[in-house]
Structure formats: C-alpha cells, structure tokens
Length: 154
Image 1 (cartoon, rainbow, N blue to C red):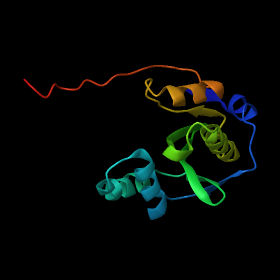
Image 2: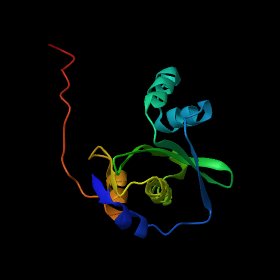
Image 3: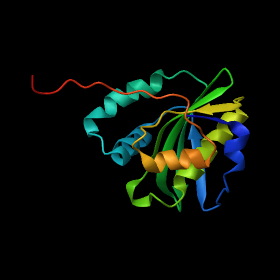
C-alpha cells in the first residue's frame, strides 16, 4: 500500500495523551517489547537484533507511550524520497483505541522531517484492523502477493 505524505498526516488528529520517541537503533527493550507484542518466541531476540541493526540509515525505531507505558512500536526507513513503514504493532491490551493511527502519523511525521514525500508498507490482507487503519490514512493497495506453502504430508 502507498500514500502521499500530506494525505496521511492531514488525516491524523494527534492526541496529546500519547508521546512518540524515536531512536536510531532498536535497543534490547524495544526488541523485547516487539517480540512480546507480536507473540513471537523469545528465542528470536538475537535474530531480530541482527536484522534491525542491518537496516541502513536513514531509519528510526519508534515507541509510542501513554502515561509512561509503551503501547505501540514501529519502524520507519527513508530512502530516495520514500518512507517504508514496518514492524508496526500495538500492545494487545491497547488495541482498538486509535493508537495505530497515532503511531503511523508519528512515523510519517518523522519521515517527512527526513525528506520523504511518499509512504509505503506491506500488510497481510487478512489483517482487517490494520488494512482499515491504513485506508483511513489514505493508503491504497498497489499490488498483492501470496505465499505457497508445501503441504506437511506428501
């Protein structure tokens, strides 16, 4: 999905209850929270440390908080005028409260400040909540793909 920067940011009514902090690298706490929010196995920590550190700048790892508690995370990478938004996740106990909109808006703002004019992201079409948020923010589908998985029994 893609969106014009201005379309996305104009559609966000930023809420002062939320603060978003950006870091140039994903620290251990960010990775632990990401793994926990996504319900991934803790054993993935080392792999994610390597994956996230291999992303070349200009990049940022965002943490959105409410009353000092981390309620969402996301990553933004800017290259050649485009910003890739990825690893967007809201803590399970805080979903359906508009935090995803706040987070995407904050990521877009960071990207605009770092020279991006367009946004893109990938989302699984079955993730109806995320697709709804992205459409609300002006994202439109550009293409699709599917995975072929070999049956476990042959």
